[in-house]
Image (cartoon, rainbow, N blue to C red):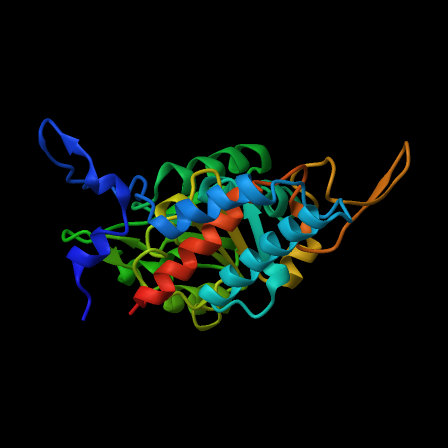
Length: 295
């Protein structure tokens, strides 16, 4: 039996009094509170094996690298990704969407192409597409809503065409959108689909293979993890074909003064020192959610 009073004890912030009364927190859609295992995992990193990853052959660097990459495996398992190489660590869902808009969008969108969004979208799944449409000449189109706040699915067939290159849609906004069906219809016209799962990942079982989504954006701090860590899931063949989003250390295979070659996935998209402790904390959050049971 799921006992909320017992679960509440895992969150030390709820021991705080506000104006003499126990804290009641109703803002988890903005950011979630952190359970003890997540706090302990981040504390352990800084106390016991704080070191950079992928760059050292000394003990604590190897331990940090192992824990960081274990977190990637946990994310892949949590969303049922076929390949761990499709899990890219970012700062948040917003950066994940911007990565796709910038890297995939600049390479694939042209004047006359269309991006299909919805009236439901958060700024993070709207503004990046506005920016890339201004740069490429692609046109934005929108799925409207019914009076009760659901997507008007009757309008989709008229909005999808061979000009549609991408559908970008939130998974939940109170209502749960039929993303697998949207993916099927998008693929029928040759379009890709990106799912913003920042709000659904803390609450619903996620299966990217069953959805058949091409990209998915997650935000760690909305699913009991630390701030400053997010995830982009992408199908490996698509990510392989995309140019790097940022340049710097870590994503380099070989560098000369005039040119460079880039590392394989997923590190091609993880320039610079990553949020190591954030990824490890996200792994602990996934362990916690999995123990509770997403169902």
